[in-house]
Amino acid sequence: MLSPRISELVLAAREACQRRTPGLAVQQDVCIDKVMAQLDAANPWLGYHHIPREVQSIWTELHLQLGEQGLADHLQRLLTNYIESFDQRFSNSGIPEVFVPEFERSFERVLRLSCSGELVANPERNIFLKDLAIARLRLVPCVSHLIHRYSGVPRRVILKQSPSQIPELLTFFRRTRGFRPFLENHVHPGMLEDFNPEGRERCYKLVAQLLRAWPESKGLIGASWYYDPSVKQISAHLGYLHDVPFENGALIVKVATEGADSGALARSVLRRRLFESGDYVPHTYLMVWPRHDLLRYTGV
Image (cartoon, rainbow, N blue to C red; front, side):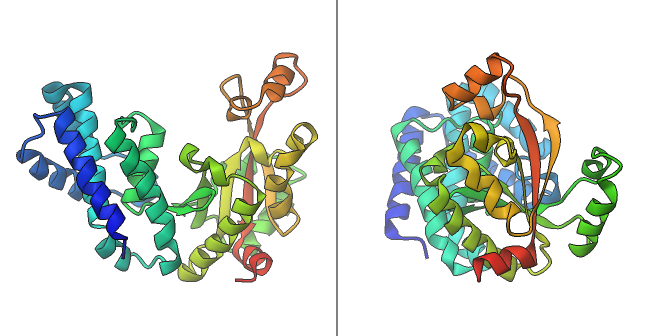
């Protein structure tokens, strides 16, 4: 299913790990098997970033034995084992075949970084946990975003809104027939080249494919500063992120206020300058797009 190029990169990445950490002995394969068994058995509702305590203990011990670089190479070996078993795992996943090229793009990116020594494999870094979740099929790459299957809308979101809004919100969620399960989208820095209107449209069509494959899913949700309707007044080129779902049936509500560490300020000099002058405060907004509205929009 995966191309021979990926198999070649798996071998090259393993050899690179072994060169960097000669102490990666045969028994590490037994250790990796234990880790994979624990990760596979983990409750998916705890999130793609959840790592069982047993696995954390194994990684702590490996860090003591092999050092920081040794643990990093162990984690990269773990990624290669998951990628190597992709074909069988994918066949049993129920994920449509159209996603194979999406996974392959992610795998090629990770493996090339591993070969060059540029992959930062650290269990404390969310970016690595996302790469690991892709390899585990817990996150599905969809062009511009990653999709997590097991998510939902916290009821506290409703309670945070003004009393006058609550009846309307309850009506909305009666229409979706509940608060979960929803698909949830996440951003990955390695996929930013497709973070644009065209990539997002392709993403929506793939999300629709997942909704067809997983009929229990009630739609798509996401929480981010870029769903804030005021963002397009500052960064007009990002307006599509709010407008497309909102104009096609999605609910978008404010859930939190962000500070100086907000992602809204990380890549924009203008937004940071406005934040520092007090003219812009980033807010997290939740987007909830019901399945029938998203399917109607995409025509899938």
